[in-house]
Image 1 (tube, rainbow, N blue to C red):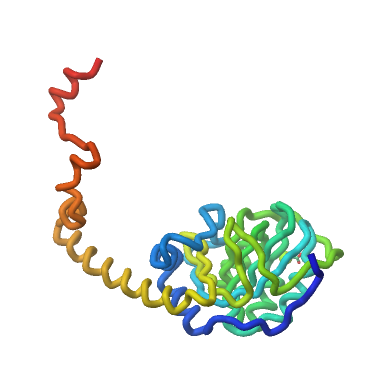
Image 2 (cartoon, protein in one colour; image 1 turned 180 degrees about the horizontal axis):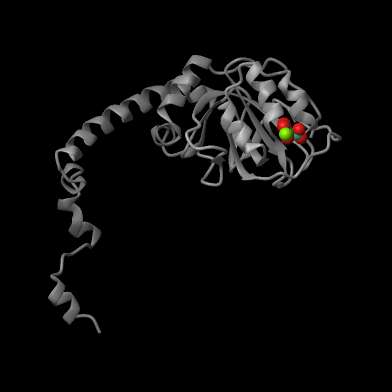
Length: 234
Ligand SMILES: O=C([O-])CC(=O)C(=O)O
Ligand SMILES: [Mg+2]
């Protein structure tokens, strides 16, 4: 690995990233074809956190947040800091002091493959943060890593400039080239869900609405009266 800091990488439109943030992690993930989700391990540090921004990526050594200090200078308004470690770590590499510096630069949030700390302060500040764990474990500032190189988090490759969407459901990453498709497909999905929601509010069933009732035999699903079921049960 080269200990490089890549400056000014191309990034997705920050307005588009913000819009995808309002759509949410689940909608964007579904709209793209059920891809890009970092998985259920990535949890918000406080409930209600929501954001969409463009990735500034950081590769740190476990227990060492030197490269976060280096990365902050590279962050521009509308960015999201995405922190990976080059071997698994639960240490609390990031807290409210880093968040203060990022908020000053107009950064919309942070996603950490390791731990976060100062959760109460992050909640009070309203600074969005997602991580695998909460951990008070402190860090050193000793080892070089990289900034704005591709990193892997939750099995997904995150390139600098990709869109990162986070909410209570977790985090979804959208490759920069897929942003136009994500916007169109997410809007279509939200419109479709609005129509379905209205139908469910009227009492319609998904079984009928989605044409599933006629397909029940195909799934091998049969209806059996309770008495028959009990009699047939050994
Ligand atoms: O300083 C650290 O190592 C992380 C932290 O707690 C903060 O950013 O407030
Ligand atoms: Mg702290």
